[in-house]
Image (tube, rainbow, N blue to C red; front, top):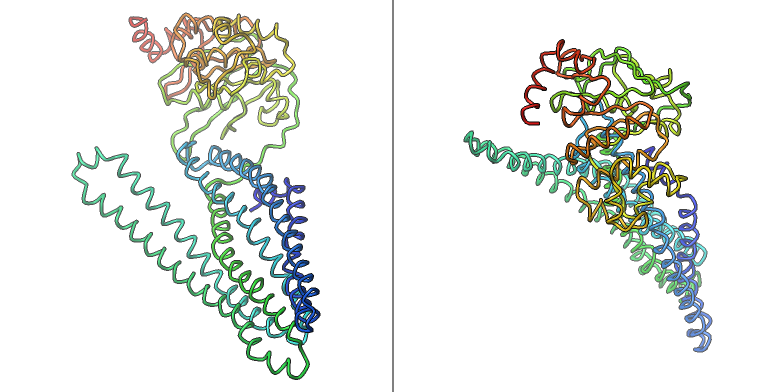
Length: 560
């Protein structure tokens, strides 16, 4: 709930604008019954048709004013809900990726971000429906109380009674909505698991068991739907009684009140207008909104809190005293399994060129996350310039440490905009030097120079060309430490060598998570990760010390 409220608080101005236009929208509900009553008592009831028509025209003007207010509300709705959605997506993705209960899981991110869409839609529903209905109901009750104060109890007692009963039903509705959400998720997970493993299911003759598992989850989902439907029907009955009872009481008692002079015919008609056009439908729609939108919002926020806990940014404020990177007894593992990085110590001074080699899934990319401060070690320390990298001021860390992942991230815009992302003040000459250094000049020439357009997600570029632009972008930035995490995997060996030599000559600390073992031949030192104790040394030293390294080299060199 905290991130949701903080995200809404960040949209204070649009929210205040919505409230202001809501007041304008509520004017017809406040004045409708009184204007109709005046049209009868001062116009039609005394034979003055002209005056009656004028009061009705005033009612029409007020209705138009309310419609204008409603139009403004819809025009400003997106200014609130879209930034809210973006903020929550960021919170959810960070929460999933930093969860200690599992490794980063793209499917988990996709599954949980669906709840963000529920939050977005529910918030929009609240801002449009609940807000308007609250304003309408309050305005109508105020207008009714001032018009026929002697019979205000006709409305207050039934309405209060129905709202109290409705409130007593809310916990049951909330439990039912949550049970349905969980049943939906379990049914989708069961069906998805069977479909993804269909070949294994058939091969093992487990079709009957798979069908039974899916059927059990679907039956649970159906039962949850039925229970929620019964609770929803009971809610509708309670609210309907609260909405119709005041109108029925007024119709029964009105003749006696008018004959005794306690009410005029116009006041009775005005009260009927308030009840039938404002109070009654507003209560019904308010109950529908609270019983669906609010409950869906509450359940979705709870699921987000459970599945994607909030990750607070470390209060980094330290400034490193140099460019040296040092790991001291660093250990890290995902979940409760065997650590993928175990008791690793190394020191990288400016000018160092380290290649990290080992089989896939052994923890090389995890090491990249530790070096850049994206992951905190479970034991030991990762230091940058003599201070813990996670405690470095974020603005300093982001400008002085750069990671180029295997996945290439390019954005719709010009080549210049993509290349200067991390160096906004870089001149065109500097950008062209970076392109030339990594061998990407030909790509940019083909695109039409720095003013050429890069399509969405690198559209129009090959995978290798996109990687060249990504590494050129980092080459042009002022980072002192650069980590290439298989960032040249789509380049041919010759182009890969150009990139690595360019970064080595650039200065600073260079760490290459090797895609090809040729990267180890160009590095000044090599770190071998094979599931045991990491080994650090030069290429020649490791050939003599590490059987795993010799085997890797023996398998690669004939292919090379």
